[in-house]
Amino acid sequence: MTRRRREDSVRNEAQVLTAARETLDERGLAADVREIARRAGVGVATVYRHFPTKDDLVQAAMRTDLDGWTEVTARAVEDADAWTGLRTIVEHTVATMARHRAILDGLASRTEAFAACHTHLRDALTGLVARAHDQGTLRRDVDAGDIGLQILALSGVAQLAPDEKTLHRHVGLMLDGLRRHAATGPPAP
Image (cartoon, rainbow, N blue to C red; front, top):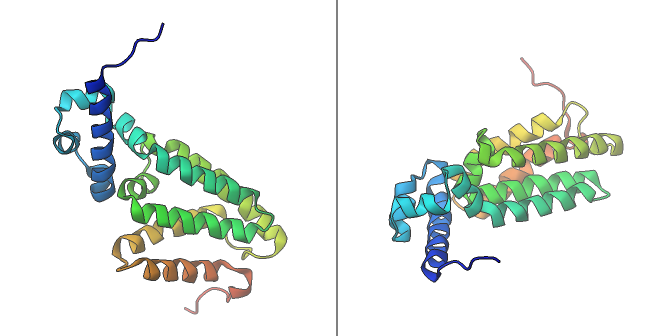
């Protein structure tokens, strides 16, 4: 027999998750559990009763956004046009990082909460890069690691861009530089 949770426990957990999402979006992984508890109107012990570690709290708070990101990247991998798939992953990942500071921090770091995201992104990019090379749409000197680093570089633009249009423009500039037709060779000394 499954035991039914008390209403106040369910309410507290929902308040903690809402406060965690808001705080993590604003402050990223630097957000303190005490700050989240205060924002939720509960004690720190209540937070830890529902989420034994900060990583557990981060994973629960970001689950919907990360699940959505994973679905988009999985669909991008299935795109017959590898370039379109790469573009979709880059654009969606950067847009997600721009909206959610904790996701930006998590993808830029090696925290346990984002380990599965790193693996998923690496695997998605590796397969798409190989196909894009085969299709002749991606510069031959670009590998999955290069694209991952460019995504992280764009995270800085995501933080500094005054608006979404500017961010989208910079994503386009980066992607244009990766297209096979754009290869100009190494810069002059």
